[in-house]
Image (cartoon, rainbow, N blue to C red; front, side, top):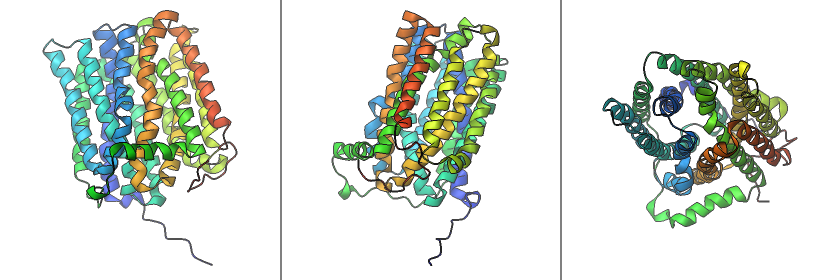
Length: 420
């Protein structure tokens, strides 16, 4: 009988991972500050309407549609750590420009839209490199553990960040909070710059035409039935969820007249669900099944969306519905994402990781700028309450792709896939 391979040392002793983790922890808090400060700045200070809020939401995700595919090939050719460092500097400068323009009395809505697009382009490259860097940085048997730790921190920031941001908005104005966001990205840059790894760039003589490498990433996703089902579910979910979440600040801050401070606190209380989801993801996969947990978490997300849609119906308990809806949605998203991202990282060859992740991101995030623009059009035409129910029905439809797939009932997901 052969003995099982020795397990790698705990990640708590992995110095490079701890540096990445600490840098990302700060940046996640900054992202939460930015996530609440930018909508408040647009709606409460610049007086944005549905159309402008839709454009702002589209600008933030436009890059996934424009450069999502080539970004993967470029990341596979580059040192991923350096890509992340450049992205963080870009985000720090873009966030820092907003309070400068505001202090000069020159800030306009178009500035916010353009800077949101710049931040989005930097995010594309950071996210593709970040997801592709984990298998490079840590041993394969620690990938799920690393993702769980990183997601737990992200959800901890999701719990504390909006509430802290909301409280700070009661003391300082939104542009000042965005200056704090810029500082957190600078801190992440320093932490990542201190990492020492053994990654080497892809040899130039092994590079092929960019389009050939892009097609390889798309083909890897398309040729695997499970990945196709996951990508379809995630893309359609993101499309309809973007319709809802783009208009949510207008509903809360303008129509329901909830203060920015209370809005932030409500998001923080609701985000406890995300922290619970990050902690429970691995045990849930073990108990329910690695495959089964994916469709079940997708169905759970439908319930969270329905609670958001009930807010205009029951305005007296809108805050409670916002909290619970956000909690349920966060549990769903975290369990779903940890399961499917760990699966993707585990089965994909390292040289193809960037292109595989970029192909998935292009499909599942590329729909979001389209949804952002359409959300403004739809909300103007049928109203925000009707849009919320449309989004809920769409997310239910999206869940069907994984519910009807072989994932339902699978105890163990394969580590190697065959084309189907």
